[in-house]
Length: 465
Ligand SMILES: Cc1cc2nc3c(=O)[nH]c(=O)nc-3n(C[C@H](O)[C@H](O)[C@H](O)COP(=O)(O)OP(=O)(O)OC[C@H]3O[C@@H](n4cnc5c(N)ncnc54)[C@H](O)[C@@H]3O)c2cc1C
Ligand code: SF4
Ligand code: SF4
Ligand code: SF4
Image 1: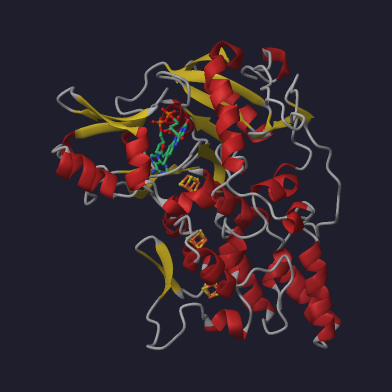
Image 2: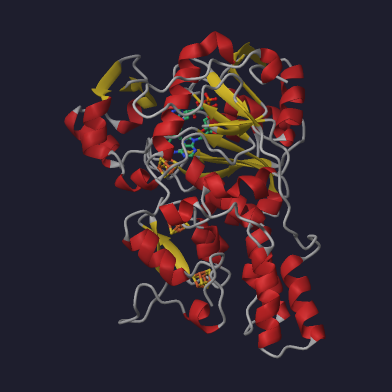
């Protein structure tokens, strides 16, 4: 059955993977309840497929209707802009080109880890949260034993020492959602999740996609219930998410071919790679090598990132980045949950902060990059008129499917209960939108230059809570 709300495995394999748009997030593999797909060379692939099986065929999708993989894929509709209502509801004081926010400011850890990328805020926040027993661990990207130097893999860090060892950004792709399987296996109930925007979106889809997609006429309630566990069970273990600003990642050949082979820098000697208008490679000798950004982008930018419209992790609880700052992190608190955590974190004395108005350059670059990146995914006229994703339509459609299939009232109720759990059956609501960024001149008239709004003052979201 096809509805605008129900994406299929076949569509994901054709319109995302074969089309060269797959972000490599691994979320489809993480939620697959039947172990049908495996993460192979950065893409989902059928496990043990018989010779001749089409690459876009899954018997479970075609047989009973499963398609959890496609339901969470960040590249299929609904995309970030369509998910605002279900994710934020009325928790949205301000909203502008970089998404919904409550507070935006700049911060630095008072004792940043040696390898921290910008202000060391992400690692300090995670370490504080673990120490204060707010989380059992954190999903991070880190280079550990058994990894090639500079090429991180997803990890679940459960000790403060492990969290601190994950400080620093690596600009090659690391599929952090794959670590959610280990979170489940280790029975961790409250982890923080750190990831780039294309990893935050599937996490939110797991949390908010209409549970009606779990229902089909051919599934018995026990199967529906099991599938629900794979969909909702994973975000249910995530206490909060930290999204990292992101314009692109580079292919591993930037490290192995350009830096190691051509520049002759052994990867094991690299302590940090940073992108600040150029690529800066710091070595443990103290030396720094540089590669012009244009050159790195031409030779090593990952083409799949051109399909990404979310620079600032618009759906995360916290978003953090380092554009236009030096040794400090731009912090966006988007949700009420983030505000509450930040208050306690700041009160611990672990960070110093500045109003965003004192970092005008960072503010301006953030706005420009967010706008530029949204422009990468221009909505077709048809998609532009699509309403916000409403978490009720599929549940109601699913009920009609069961009625049409001749199910009894008891069977329908059992299937609905298995799909929805104790979630209230969502009803269409209209949410108020947030206030525009204060003094935002808005879109320019045709032919006129775009003017950026000034950074907001502290009492209008431009400082810490
Ligand atoms: C691939 C990538 C691209 C980025 N692009 C931009 C950008 O264009 N503009 C911008 O302003 N900021 C960008 N950032 C964010 C920036 O590099 C910092 O992570 C951010 O400013 C937080 O700094 P910090 O010192 O507070 O973080 P730290 O305390 O150093 O913590 C960094 C965190 O990043 C996680 N991490 C490291 N590598 C990866 C990875 N490959 N994938 C997922 N998580 C990872 C670690 O697990 C760690 O928790 C990018 C980050 C990544 C990982
Ligand atoms: S349709 Fe279901 S079983 Fe098939 S690959 Fe997707 S999630 Fe796995
Ligand atoms: S869920 Fe992620 S890994 Fe899977 S197809 Fe979509 S973008 Fe690719
Ligand atoms: S630009 Fe960043 S967030 Fe977007 S697909 Fe690439 S790695 Fe993911």
